[in-house]
Length: 547
Ligand code: FSO
Ligand code: SF4
Image 1 (spheres, rainbow, N blue to C red):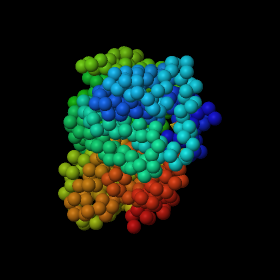
Image 2 (image 1 turned 90 degrees about the vertical axis):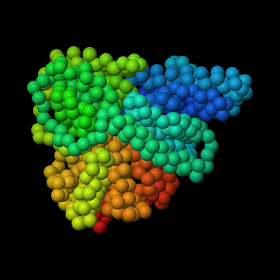
Image 3 (image 1 turned 180 degrees about the horizontal axis):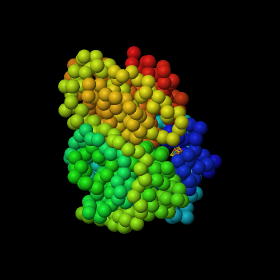
Image 4 (image 1 turned 90 degrees about the horizontal axis):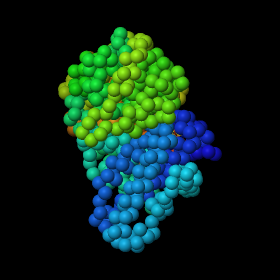
């Protein structure tokens, strides 16, 4: 076994990747990510220790959040990038140790776990990584609860980082990241570990609300929008990932250059924001979900900018057109450096590259409709409530989450097609690409697929559900005519799932498989407490959901 990782839905044999990641992650990068996690745990212990002495380190929270984000599936495959984050984390720990020693003497740093005391240079990273991987915890239930918590906070960290880029930060979120990381070095009871996992759900709600406020405060509230799927005659740049600030700066820097900008994958919902509509050269959406990127990028012909996941190891034929920025990274691609304080990122290289490329080849035509985030749906509340009262809409099916490569994910397309015409699908995240281009029609003007936005905009679906609960005078969200049939892939979906559990949602169907990192006992806790169930056959699930 040269590595062990089971953090995403595509873990080999639904057990774990042991030689090379199904995602393309090398054993070397997997080991470095394990070491980065260990260094972060150690730094978190020192942050907690310093706090007991009244010492705060204001850079710790953002550093930890960004580093956690870099270890999310399909974000960063670049050894050098992960190594520099390990070094930055160890430097943070050095600073904290000095601060603690200055306050409390040498005894201040006594009795710390090895995660907090280990130091080493690059030459020692690989050996240390072998000691600190996921399997270094031998008790499978402890391992399962710790990893469930770690994956939840990876998702939270990603959303917190996006909000921070737009100037919105919440110390309570960073504090929880620290508390959760440090907790995994301690001997806790099962109840204490479960409680932390459930608190991660609460913090995930706070974080998605913070990001929602950051996005809507900066770019306006998403509104119903028809997004073109065809192409124009100019060269183009394709933007993928989730970072709206990167998109904004690229749109500014491509104004008047004769280069158009298109979205791919999870960047589709950018079109729903009023602030981006003023750019005439924001030309439309190109292609399908992230896993379609190899074919989509071949035919796109121009440069592609990855602002976050999901990055698939690029083919030789187009790797020279792939640019990464922020937490994203892949060896052999060009990385656009972070912005200097008070300045925009510099995208001139990618713009110059685009000018040398042919226009994109058309792969689709027509438009796609989205923009049903909470403000827009609540503006239509009367119509929606009337449709429910009249019986025109019998059920809402929340099919949010992520898409992935596995063939079994056709389940979600089949469910969308098999649902009766008096049902409405509420979606967010890249899961939508399984059914958002199907001709499912509308109900009295309400489209049968309502796309709220990116995976973090699952928050919008929760806001809508809570509003409906209030309108219908119910005291339990589960009494609403709403079913949850969630597709998961990576760790942001874990955060979204924990958020739904915190909001009291029960009976969620989760697919296409239950997470490999849930031990039988931990899975039982979730099933018994929240009635979570794996997706089953299309026929049975549809029948149960509409009954
Ligand atoms: Fe998808 Fe990838 Fe948004 Fe994820 S593109 S899978 S949950 O990164 O974040 O929905
Ligand atoms: Fe395997 Fe997923 Fe880990 Fe990649 S992220 S190595 S596919 S479990």
